[in-house]
Length: 164
Image 1 (cartoon, one colour):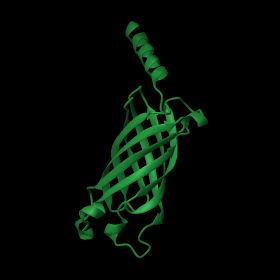
Image 2 (cartoon, rainbow, N blue to C red):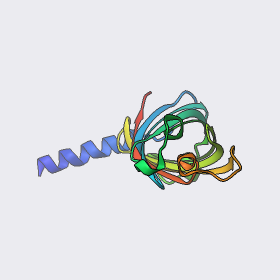
Image 3 (tube, rainbow, N blue to C red):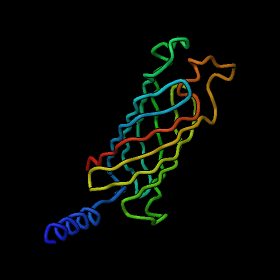
Image 4 (spheres, rainbow, N blue to C red):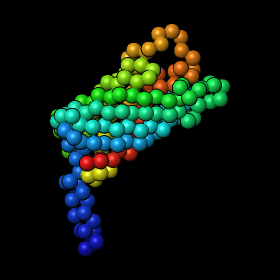
């Protein structure tokens, strides 16, 4: 019984101290997997808080699981994004460990939008999921399968670390 009580107290302490988004000067690092048609990618992202509910960042993905028939070159497989997020977890007031962040991004292939959610289990570690979709593609013509990589709807999941 003493061990069970100790575990409950420990998890209560962790739950109380975890916070999803601190605001100005908050720093988050994400690493995960990105799923899209014809590819599976590794995805990394960094976000930095500029205000109470606003952050900017960079995100990059590299497509690993591309079928050979697509003949994707390096520039087709890589993507780099500048991101702008509205961190509205505190506005929604669901849980202080939860952050929902819609935003826009400019990347190598398009101007797009994203929406993601983070949940922190402790002050420094959590999970995220995110969707990305293009709004305006830079190449308005018919895209090859290789050009469609990172230029379509994508879904990412992974871990997030608080760097503060």
